[in-house]
Length: 396
Ligand code: FAD
Ligand code: SF4
Ligand code: SF4
Image 1 (tube, protein in one colour):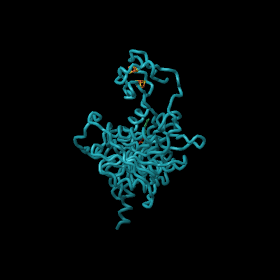
Image 2 (tube, protein in one colour):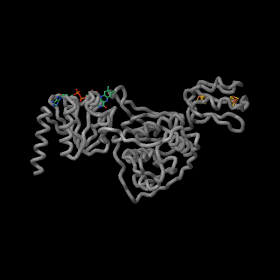
Image 3 (cartoon, protein in one colour):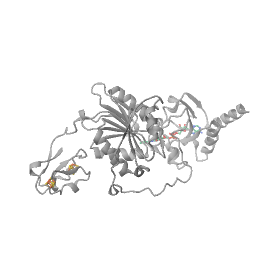
Image 4 (cartoon, protein in one colour):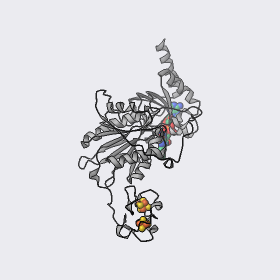
C-alpha cells in the first residue's frame, strides 16, 4: 500500500498533521506533504475532511535507492570512551564499504567528545559526523534519534549499523521507524550481495535452530544491529586521514520527553563479561549456586572472570548479566572454560568464536566437545580442584 496526498484537493486545513503517529506529515506552501517516515499505516486517510489523502495498492513503494550512498557506523561512547563494539563495527563497516566501493563514516554523539573523532578515523572511518552538544551528554532516545535521523535524511547513507547494546537496541528501531525502513536485529553476519551490492543480514531464527538471511530491497538505509563480540575489531592506524563534519544539533525542549536525573549502579554482583580475555563458565552440571565459588577460584588463578549458561541463570544461581549465549552476552575471550555445560546451540551461539575452548563434562557425548579445542571427560568437582592444584604448584 502507498499513501499519497492529492495536492489539488488539499485545502491546507492541517487536520492530518497531528493524526500521523510517525510525524510524517508536514505543511509546505499550505499543502500537506508526506515524508519518508511514512510507513503506510493508513491512519491519516479518514482524517481528511476533503478526501485528499488516498491509499493505493503499491507493494513496491520505497525510496529512490540510487540516492543513498555510504556505510555508517554508530560510534557508541560512554563517558567519552568508545565502546568496544564501535571498533568492531568499524572493522566490519570497512569491509562492507570496500566491497561496495563506497565511504565508511562514523556517527558520534555526545558532549566534549570531539577527541574521539581522530580515534574513529584511525580505526578506519573516512568521515566522522559529529554532534557535540551538552544535551547529548547522556543518551536519551529522543535527542539521539532526532539528531541522527536528521543527519540520515540530509546525507542519505545506504547502510547504518549499530551495536546491539542497550542503547543500540533502543536507538536502532526508533531510527528505522522514523526513516520508514526495516531493521534486522542481532545480526551475526553481514555480507554484500555481489550481484546488486545489497546488504545480506544474517541472524539466528526459530530459537537459534536456523539462520535467516534478510535483505531490505526497496527502502533505505539498510539497518542492522550487531552483537558485541561477534565481529573482528578494526586495525588501528594513527596515520589514517579523514574528515569531520559537524552536525547541527536542532533539538527543542519539547522534543525531549525524558531527562536523566542520576545514574544508580546495580546492586549485587553484576558481570562485565563481554570484554573478558578469560571466562570460566558454569552450567546446570554445577548442581547448585555454591559451584560458582569453585569457578571463581579457578577464574581468579587464571586472571579471568566467571560466566554461566542459561540453565544456571534460570535456576537462580547467578545474575543474568553472566549469561553467555543467544539471549545473553556474546563473548570472544582468548580462553573459554565450559564446566558442566552441555553445549546447546543457543549457548554455542554466544561463545563458539572464542580463541580456545576447554570443556569439562562427565558425559563424553556432550555436544560441547564438538566445539572444544581441549575436552576433559570427568566430574568437574574432581577436575577443577586438580587444575587449581597444578596451577598452584607451577606458581611455587
Ligand atoms: P544442561 O543442558 O542440563 O547440561 C548440563 C551438563 O552438565 C550436561 O552435559 C551434563 O553431562 C554435565 N554435568 C552434570 N554434572 C556434571 C559434573 N559433576 N561434572 C561435569 N559435567 C557435569 N542457553 C544458554 O546457555 N544461553 C542462552 O543465551 C540461551 N538462550 C536460549 C534461547 C532460546 C530461545 C532457547 C529456546 C533456549 C536458550 N538457551 C540458552 C537454553 C539452551 O537451549 C539450554 O537449555 C541451556 O544452554 C542448557 O544449559 P546447561 O548446558 O547448563 O544445562
Ligand atoms: Fe490537506 Fe486533507 Fe491534510 Fe487538510 S487534512 S491538510 S485538506 S490533506
Ligand atoms: Fe502517517 Fe500513517 Fe498517514 Fe503515513 S499513512 S502519513 S504514517 S498516518
